[in-house]
Every structure is written in structure tokens, then in C-alpha cells.
Length: 430
Ligand SMILES: CC(=O)N[C@H]1[C@@H](OP(=O)(O)OP(=O)(O)OC[C@H]2O[C@@H](n3ccc(=O)[nH]c3=O)[C@H](O)[C@@H]2O)O[C@H](CO)[C@@H](O)[C@@H]1O
Ligand SMILES: C=C(OP(=O)(O)O)C(=O)O
Image (tube, rainbow, N blue to C red; front, side, top):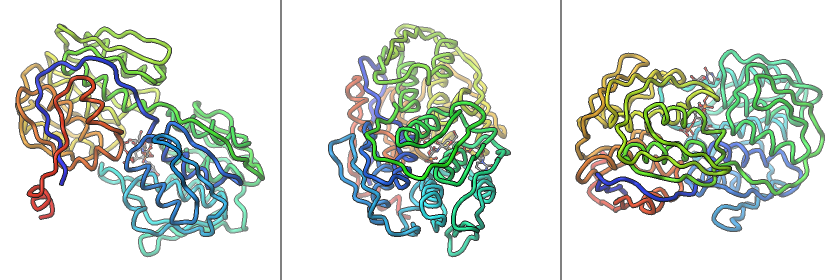
């Protein structure tokens, strides 16, 4: 089992280049299924979730070729099945986008229920309600969702989402792009990756309007042509390096980003006392010599503070003076990692959706594990602040969403390496 070994206690310094956004890539790649011609997708992050969705598409018959580290050519014309029932589907959350894409192409889909990070229950009732409104019936059979259009082709409709859901907004956009007539989705998610998918679909000839607002209108089209499309930068990867800069009292310039996507993150870093300088496609976080102080954070759908940066900010706030209160408002159970931070002597208590951090006492090195993707990133940040050697296991979670995480932190001066530990393999298998 691979582990990260981190010798912490040094400020990060320098520049880091952010990769393409995981949560856009994992929507756009299945989106290619809807296209009637081959597509080239650029700025794809080299992460395991992307490898997984690429392999699933290949197994379905698509020709997927890596042109270089960040570019994939995908020819969906050879896909001959509306089914994705390989076990790989359970390895990630975003495999549920195969439902929308296959429904849009075939009017039917059979896809295993998805996996992804465990935050307690992750329902898909809103996805299914939306598909039903577009004219589909579904049943759950052998762990798969089997869904069929009642009349062969999906029909546009008005859909009001009961909760603001990224996955539902994206899945319904995928399903509706080739449906008959007009689909109106209200109470949509507004995340940058929702807008990126809409831009991708429109570049192929779709008619999607309003992405980035509460209401998205999609008029179905018959044909989508091939394109070359570049994925947006990863807002959450950027936020992770920004939090790490603050936690270590360093100075880091995060490059290849869209500063607007980071507004809620830069606002919090300014509030605790960091200097932030914004450029066209970069932002510098300067925390050198600062006496950083507490803040409160409530996670919200975009443009609110992203839940996917919550663990990284909790780890960072352990180093800031005063009591910070976090309100995790999106997921019921996204604090499993806090017991790992407590191993490092973090003074954090959890009361329902609140995490209360008594900051300002240094963390101590320990053996910890990543309990999920962003929790793993939080462990790296915590380890970078702790004087001594911290060993992080379960790093496959981190590799789901961070490209070259060791190399990028090393480039900022961190003492971090990946090691293979055969004993760990035994320990983790029991
Ligand atoms: C692959 C991907 O992009 N994953 C992201 C996506 O997950 P995902 O798309 O799964 O998250 P959603 O936005 O759908 O979930 C938001 C909230 O809606 C609830 N809900 C969702 C769907 C549904 O049918 N019924 C329902 O009640 C969820 O329980 C949760 O409380 O957005 C989350 C919120 O920004 C992020 O944490 C994930 O990183
Ligand atoms: C929770 C996340 O991903 P997923 O929904 O794919 O599990 C994430 O990116 O932080």
C-alpha cells in the first residue's frame, strides 16, 4: 500500500500550476457519448477518476486515445450499448452521468449505482425525478438503475429541483440536450463545472441557456458535431494549495486559475489575515509572518463556500488563533476525517453539522489516514504544519482528484514523498 511521508514545519514558497477541474472532466467525458463525431478534450487532469471514466467508455466501445498528459481524443461512434454494468462504475460518483448521457443517446440506460466519497447517504432521487419528468420510467435491479423512455425519445418538460444538486443539474442537461422540445430546470446548481459542461455542449451545437443562473433552458437538437474543448481549471485544487500556503505561513502563487471561481475562498483567507493578490489567471496568497486569526465558514452551493474545500480549511484553521466554527451545510456526514486530525492533537469537536476548532496550538506528527479525497488533502495540509514526520495512508483517495500532488507540493518546497509499504498492505486489508 502506498503512503505519503511528510516532514512538516516549513513554509511553502513558490508557484504551482493548477490542473483541469476533476468535477468538470468527469461530466464532460461522458458528455462525449452524446456527440455524433469524435471530440478532443484538453486540460484533462491526470487523476484516477478520469482514468476510470475513460476505461468505462472504452469498455462500452468508445475509442479513447491519450494524445498527451492532458489531452484525450474520444470517438464515441463505436459505442453499441446503453449499459454500463462493469464494477468500475462503482469506483466513482460521477459514473451516474452515464445515465443522462446514455438516455440522451439511446432513450434507455442501465448503469450500476455509483460510488464516490462516503458522506453518509448520497441520494439520487432528484436525478430520477428529473428523468421521469422527461418521460422515463426506472427500476433498480441487481444494484443497477434500469431506465427507459416511455415513448422511445425523451420529451422536454419543466423540472423544479427540491434541492440544489450539482449532479442532478448536470445529468438533466445531458439527458435533455437531444430531447424533443424545451426543458426548463429550475433551482439549478451554479458551480463552474455546470457552466463548463453547458459551454462544452453548446460548442458541439447544443442549445443550453442560463447555466450559472438558477434556471437553465435546454432546447433539444438532433445532431452534435465534434469539437476540441478545453476544461476549466480546478477551483478545489486551487483552494487546497491556497489553504496550504496559509497553514504553513508561506507565500504561494497559484497559476492557471479563474480568480472569480475562487471568490469565496479568497474572501475567507483575507478575513483571517492573509494578503491576497489577484491576477488575470493567478492568485498569490502571502501569509509570511502573519498572525492569522479565526473565522466562521458555512458551506453552500456556488457561489457560497465549497464543501469540497471544507476539510482543507479545517486543517488550516487549527493553526489560526481563536475559535473557528464550521457549518457543513451540504453533506450530513463530512467530518469523518476529524478523528484523524485529533490523532495529531487537533482541538476540534463536532456537534451535528458544526465543527468547533480551538485553533492556535501546533499539530503533532502522527500516523493518519485519508478517509476520503478532500479529507486526504486536509491530512497533507495538517502534516505540512506539524514539526516532524507524519505518515498518511489510504492515499488512493487523494489520487482520485489531485494530479501529481507530491510533485506539486515538492515544487513548493515541501518535504513529502510517496513510499510503498508492504506491511501497510496487510494492515489495511484486515
Ligand atoms: C462528481 C462531483 O461533481 N461531485 C461533487 C458533487 O456531488 P453530487 O453531485 O453528488 O452532489 P449534489 O450537489 O447532488 O448534492 C448536494 C446535496 O443535495 C442532496 N441531494 C442530491 C441529489 C439528489 O438526488 N438528492 C439529494 O437530496 C445531497 O444529499 C446533498 O446534500 O457536488 C457536491 C456538492 O458541491 C460535491 O461535494 C462533489 O464533489
Ligand atoms: C466529493 C468529491 O467527489 P465525488 O463526488 O466524486 O465523490 C470531491 O471532489 O470532493
